[in-house]
Amino acid sequence: MANSRYEYVRQFESDDRLLPSTWLVVRIDGQGFTKFTAKHGFEKPNDIRALHLMNRAAMTVVEHMTDIVIAYGQSDEYSFVFSKDTQAFDRRASKLTTLLVSQFTSAYVFYWHEHFPDTELLFPPAFDSRVVMYPSERIMRDYLCWRQADCHINNMYNTCFWTLVQRGGLTEKEAERRLRGTLSRDKNELLFSEYGINYNAIENIFKKGSVVIRDRELIDVVDTVGKTSKRSRGVVRTLHCDIIKDAFWASHPEILR
Ligand code: ATP
Ligand code: ATP
Ligand code: MG
Ligand code: MG
Ligand code: MG
Ligand code: MG
Image (cartoon, rainbow, N blue to C red; front, top):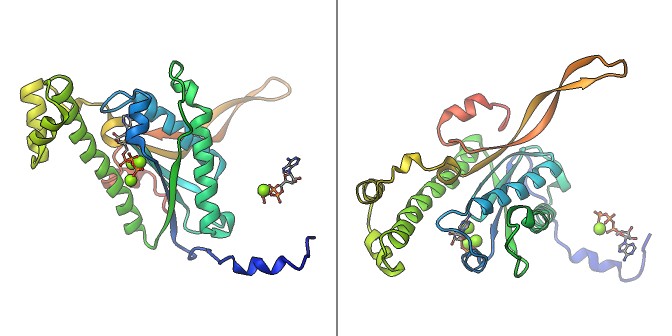
């Protein structure tokens, strides 16, 4: 095809293929979402509509990129784990990160109005993207533990912070000062004894974040003579469960195979 004397400039492109036999994790994160959430009137600490929109965008990505084995999201971020032997886009880092994040972002905008029917999108949001290789199952699981622990820590802090501001009438500065140096049990105690909030009773989507997996479901199929039979088909599902302890992995051994 194109064979001009300018072709040589292609040699300046570098080979960015990632190592074989490593899990690839693409993590995307909303750019400047502190401002984006304020401008669009997100409820604090957790706007459930926004989490559902993030999950919808993540499911779009998982449906399109079939080598993703699990995805985990919280706040304005999502991590997508590719099977360790994926050959998607020849394992080229720039292709993986850019195609994934642009599809996520366009899905976020595409589905915005389903989740925010009364809120106009004021400007086009952006997400950043990086890819990291993980060489063993233990380290791969620890990565997911790290993100879920981060979700828990931030959610507990934010729940206390916004309770102090919204119900305690503290300014944001005062709330921050009040929480400085407190441990997890102090925060539990503050919520319970001063505001009657049982942290454990808060919805799992806030405490645990969202886990997107592939699953199978049985559906009825009717053949040409009207006979019904069962068929199994793949579905993408969103859960809000613990992925730190062994139980989840014991019941889904295929994910990190
Ligand atoms: P950066 O560009 O460096 O990522 P950022 O402002 O996006 O900057 P983050 O550390 O990514 O910083 O934090 C995400 C911000 O978005 C936090 O302020 C968080 O409270 C807010 N946020 C994300 N999701 C929600 C939500 N569902 N409801 C309310 N606020 C949210
Ligand atoms: P890849 O995913 O590998 O990029 P591709 O199908 O996008 O595959 P390209 O080499 O990028 O392949 O070619 C872009 C295609 O889009 C061509 O078929 C081109 O004719 C078509 N295309 C792009 N812009 C226009 C346009 N403005 N009008 C009509 N066709 C267009
Ligand atoms: Mg950041
Ligand atoms: Mg961000
Ligand atoms: Mg973030
Ligand atoms: Mg193209």
